[in-house]
Image (tube, rainbow, N blue to C red; front, top):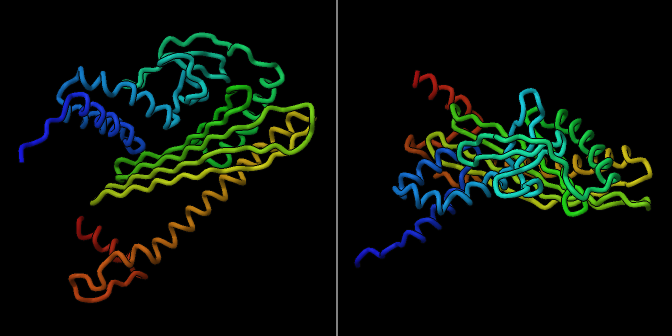
Length: 288
């Protein structure tokens, strides 16, 4: 049967989908591979530049505007126009090149149509979020509180890229927080957390999981107390999610993964899982 013809538009669509599926920390590698496959830079830019932009926003990419200044995040919450974003904490806007990952044209910026009370609440939540990131993300995370559509939107990103050890991983979570009202009571905060890990030494294994989360925060007349309750609710929900992932991983490691292996390896003797680390150590020593 003759090969089916694939149009340039279809190739571009496939390429864009591949870009969107790039593992954490490996965007450049995937982009370069797609470039080789397409063998047409004009088609690549036409088809994939928008996919690259959306990828970085979906990944909550952390960026630095100024030296010694806390990072901000690229999200759908703080995009002013195509390729231009703002940082609510430093009150600056900036351009971002999604391919070179370069920040430019940093300018003062005030978000329009923001109520003073909501901005005060945002700052209070940001302060509590900073403490949370420092304590529970070991200073490798970034968290930013935005004002979006009349409420607060929280974005958290943390990653470890270990290319020399053949693995990369990223945590992302996003939360929607109702604005303070004149009435005291309990407010529901809703979020989603995502974990992506890629391990590629002598194989290609990816962990990808996400879960919708929710929590309850007590609102009071005290803005700082309300902000602290919001972050406490987020902390509780994220900790429970993390614990469930670790528990499931342990179960899979102890049972599911073992059943995927054949009963007897080529040595014709059963594998001693209790001494698995010793086997790995001997293997590493033989390599040396």
